[in-house]
Length: 247
Image (tube, rainbow, N blue to C red; front, side, top):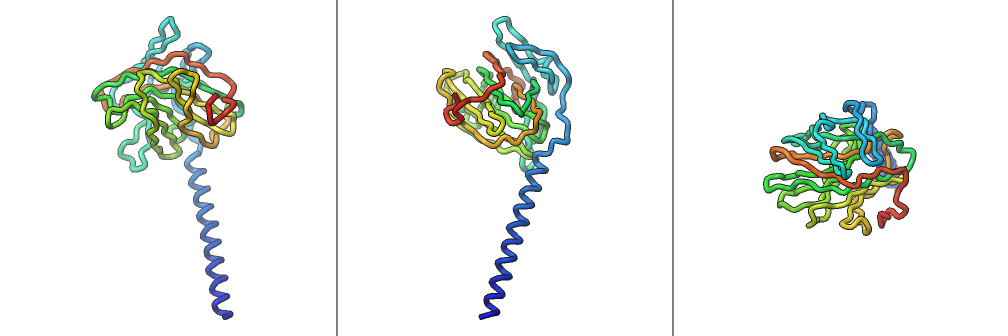
């Protein structure tokens, strides 16, 4: 009986030790994935649109935009432009252009825009995109994107070392309102067809550093080039009051 009891204690101890080691490894992996020692790349720019001041451009983004008098911004891109850190490494790319505005992540924020991508028959993964960006290994993109079957979908991609990829609702309209909001503790992404009723598509803990960049982009991973139109862009220092409803 003593032997059985002793063996049970040993097994339990090993189990606890293994569990602790797994937790330590998980914490270590998370820390490595969210490391912020690499500097956000890009060049200084001076682009003002509505109440947003874009001060950083990635991949020559400032050369690819046209601002119209009605507040509309046309954002073009060439072929094979994307931001994605493929888990198997085959499709990784950091070539999409971005316009970025610095945000104090110790305060609430909400970025909203009406997005109209140019979808074509061969434009697989063409998208208009909103970003939370820290560096090339730590960011979230929120897309209105064309999928493998030609559907136009809401898509979220969160990258911490490598990227996940989440296809959400199909949208039949050519344009959609998109919104990313945080109260400093929580980040959530929403879309709407009328800017009144918002559908939440993603919510998670805000583990970004104190200084982040919010931005817009257009991508064309497969085709020869495309453009997205951004309208009613707004970046404000407050969050939604109801994270489930997005209002």
